[in-house]
Image (tube, rainbow, N blue to C red):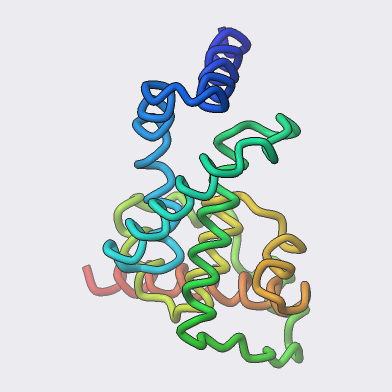
Length: 185
């Protein structure tokens, strides 16, 4: 069944390449919301996220000839959305400070157990939203958008070690926020 769905999606992309406006609309309807969610996790502002998604769809539809089916259309489009969202942050001069890597081994040694993430989803989302911007962006790109750390480093033009350290610190901060909430209850 998955194969059939993927063929139908590929056919819609091909119809778009031929200028079929109903195919453009169908693709937009299918992917607008997940792309908006991806952008929101980066820019943290609904108006900016909507703008980035619109620009990404325009770019994608204008450059369909560069889509080669090496990945799914959704993954290709998500990459465009993420790049546009990060570019917006760069225009705002968001700085990616080099993180002090001393003590990194202790942070990565497993002090933050993955099973501890079995908390209520809404509480986790709220905790993630409270992270400093650079922590929030890297955490979301790695955990939610499932980009590899070296890809994140390339996108943000920072070192892989910096991405890894910021991710681990963000994860620890999320856990600390959740534990703090538990202690208050």
